[in-house]
Image 1 (cartoon, rainbow, N blue to C red):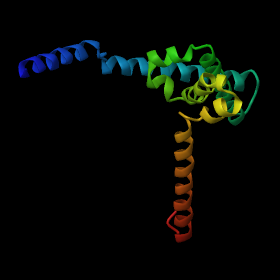
Image 2: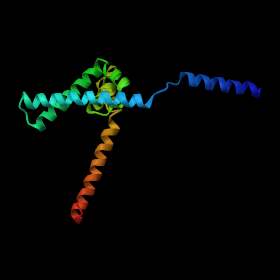
Image 3: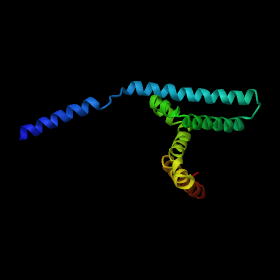
Image 4: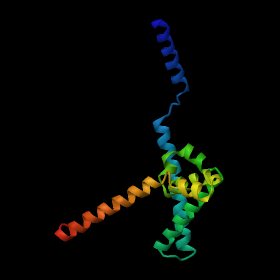
Length: 155
C-alpha cells in the first residue's frame, strides 16, 4: 500500500516537472531590455518630433509624449496586441507608462459586458488601484516628513 502511494507521488512529481515551464533568466532580461528600449526609443522619437517640427517646449513635448504612448498602449490593448508584447517582453513592457495604461485598459475591456457601473466602473482599477493607492499614500507620508524636516531646519 505504501509502495503504491510512493509510486503515485513520484509519477505526479515527474508529471509536474514535465508541464512546468522553464525560463532562462538571461533571455528574459534580454527580452525585457529590448522591449523597454524600443518603447523608450519611440518616446524619444516623439519628443524629438514634438520639439523640432512642432516647436514645443520640453515640458509640453513630454506631456504629449506621455499622452501618445498611453493612447497607443490602450489601443494595442484593445486590439489584443499589447498582451502579446507583454508575454514576450515581460517587465520591459510592464514597467513603462505603457504598462500602466495596459493595466487600466485591460480590466475595462474585459468587464465591459457587465455594464458601465458594475463592470467597467468597479473593475477598471483592479490591477492599477493598489499602485495608485500606495503611490498617493507614500507621496503624502514623504510630504509630511519633508514639511516637518523643513520646520526643524533639517531640509
